[in-house]
Image (cartoon, rainbow, N blue to C red):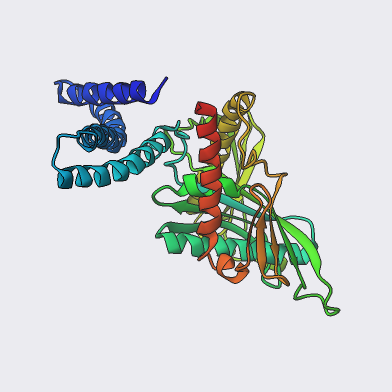
Length: 357
């Protein structure tokens, strides 16, 4: 389908949605769904109108520029406008092509972030804690809401595993490429000899699931309650407030003990369970699509090494796009992470545009 056919289709759908929303008897759920689609299409229609207007102006400028009977000054102005529009129209068309790319249906979702220490013992746990802080600060930079759901700490400030939710505009669309193995090369705080060690942590970013996205039947759950345990085994409190939920059909087990209230711990555990069930459903769909398309920025598989943080050299390298930034301090406080994220998004968009072409 060429670009003009896409223009016509977008315009026709926009007009159809406008008519449907104006019709009597539309129930609230349908109205909300149609309104969202119309809201998504409105900037695309505006872009289409801008391109068609610029194309018409380009044709007019060319005609006046080539008109030998026209006033010399008018022809000079038309020629200047012609070359300006000749550059502008392709740029507008490229912007529109990006807007028309098939959207990941999960992009507008909030995200569930899981960070786990990998190979490397205590140093891996310290690095996992550093990554967790990096994402928390990045969320603050972008104005997103951060909530820590569960965290298992080590005695010296490391993190065995942690789960957090990040809420806000475009969260999953920006963080989805963070899933994978993150490797660190540095002299550990626990290393007296000053030797550089390599260790790793695993990051998983899942779209947060609402109750409407994943139906969980209570009879499919086994819920166990027990006393919360702190680092080193001491009791956080003396009530059975910790909750572990087992989803029997899938075998997925989640737990939460951070809150003193059993009710709050159960709510948090259910949020994690829904996200993992949603992710399993998403992976099943993605595996079907993977046969036809392999993303340029990797599959997002958690076993795939995606990035190296080399502290002695002050660099961060993303292996999927061969991007190296010599500003590790700014990356680790969330300030420069957007540079990597933007490059990953651009690479993914370029791959999708190439497929459409």
